Figure 1 (tube, rainbow, N blue to C red):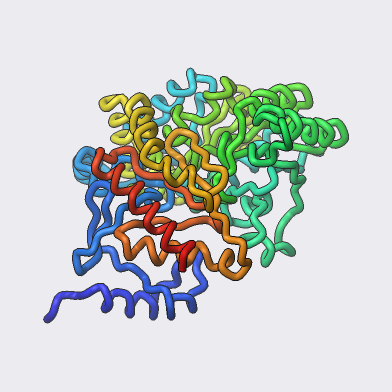
Figure 2 (cartoon, rainbow, N blue to C red):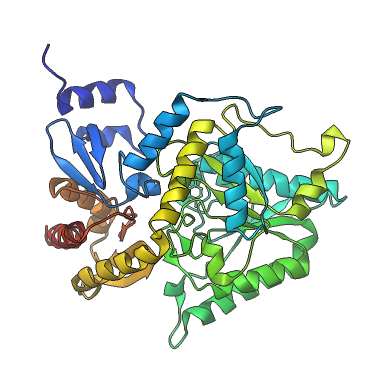
Length: 446
Ligand SMILES: *Cc1c(COP(=O)(O)O)cnc(C)c1O
C-alpha cells in the first residue's frame, strides 16, 4: 500500500476531527497542514515541506520539537511509572516538581495543586479563592474582577473572567457576570503619557471598584505584563506592584494567570518577578511541560493552604481531575526546568531576543506597522489595513501566505506576533525575520 500523503490525512481529518478554534467550513478554502514529524523549531509535513514554528505551537513549545533531553527523560519515566492516582498516593516526579517550583518563588508559593489544562488551573484558582474566603467566614466574597481584553480559557468559569467577545458572546447566558476594569495596555497612552502613567490611571479604576464592592469580591485575575490572546497587549510592571498593594489594602485575592507568560517568556521565569510581587494564586501551564504533555498547576501561599487545613472534610479543597499530577507530564516539566538551569536559558534568551529585535528592525520601522513592542521572547506589531474587509481577512491571508513561505505564524486580528521557541540559531533568527517581512509585505500588497 502506498504510504499516506498529506492529502490523505487532510481528507480523513476533515471527515472525523473537529478542529479547535476553527470554523470548519473555512477549510474548504484554507488547507489543513498534516504534520508528520518535528525537529527543533521545525515542523514537517508528509511531503517534506517544512514550517518554522514561530508561535511555539500555541505558545507551549520552549526547547524545540523532539528535544533529545526531554525525550530521554520521558523514555526513562515510561518504564518506571506512567500514571498513578494522586489522592492517597504520591510519587517522585510530582514531589520534585512541586519543590522546585516552590523554590523558584522563594517559597512564597509553596503549595502546588495540579490539573491538566490551563482553563482548569483558572477554575481551581477561582474555586480556591472563593472557598478560602468561605472557610474564613467571608461567604459574601463571591465576585471576580478581570481586565478588559483578558483571556483565561474557555470552560464556563474561565470564560466568565475572559473578555474576548469572539469566544464569549455566544455563551453569555451561561456565564456569571464579572467586573471588567480597564486594561493598562501601554498603547492606551494619551499624548505625553508614559506606560507608567497608563498603569496608574488603570489602577484608579480598580481602586474605585474595590472601595465600592471589596466585601463582595473574592479575587481579581490578571495576565501579568502581557495580555496575550487579545493581541499581545503589554503593560508596565508598576501596574502589578500597585495592584498587589490594593489587594492587600482591600482584602481581595490576586490571581496571576502565568499560563502564557510564565516559564521565561517575558524575560524572568515568572512575569510577576519584574514587579517584585507574588500573587495569592499563580497559574502555570503551556510551557511548563516543554510543550510535550498536558499539565497545569496552581501555586498558592501557606496562608491559603492553612485556611483549608482542618479535621472537617467540607473545609478541604475537594477538587480533582483523573490525571492530576501525571508522572509523565511532571517528568517532562522536570526535564524542562533542568534545561533552564543547564543552559542558563534566561541569560541566553536576552541575547537571542536582542538579535531577533535587530533582525526585525525593518518591520518595526515599516510605514504599515504600528506599535512594534517586545517583552522578553514575545514580539508584536499591529498591521495598518485601512480597508475594513481587508482588515477582517488579514489574519487568514497572513497565515496562508506564511505557510507558503515555510513559516507558521497566526496573527490575532491585525496583530502579528512572534513567540518562538528559545532555541533559534543565527540562521533561524535571520530566516524568521526575513520570512516575516516577506510575508507581511506580500499580504499588505495583495
Ligand atoms: C492558553 C491560556 C489559557 C487556557 O489554557 P488551556 O490549556 O488552553 O485551557 C488560560 N490563560 C491564558 C493566559 C492562556 O494563554
